[in-house]
Image 1 (cartoon, rainbow, N blue to C red):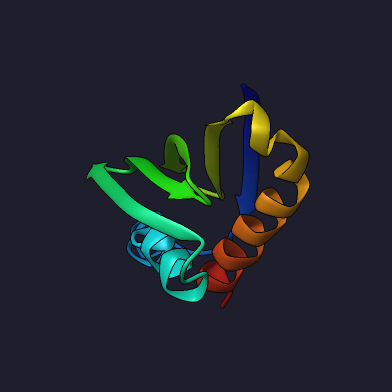
Image 2: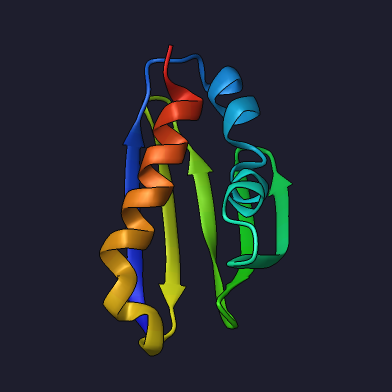
Length: 101
């Protein structure tokens, strides 16, 4: 397993950042049709757990909305570790878009 550790800074009130970041994985599913499936996202306060399949591989992790950033941690199967940079970049980009302004 490869670790996925992403920090996305924001300048929003925490409640606003939370409302914007909820649904991040489902948004990725819509934009990456055919690649991302079986999406699950559960929230308890400012902490969430997610799971999804990408090209047949299961990924899971946690999202935590903090005062000035969003922390996303997950585990990538070994077969996807070669795409860690691409996966991180896509998640950072989409989260950044949601948290801008």
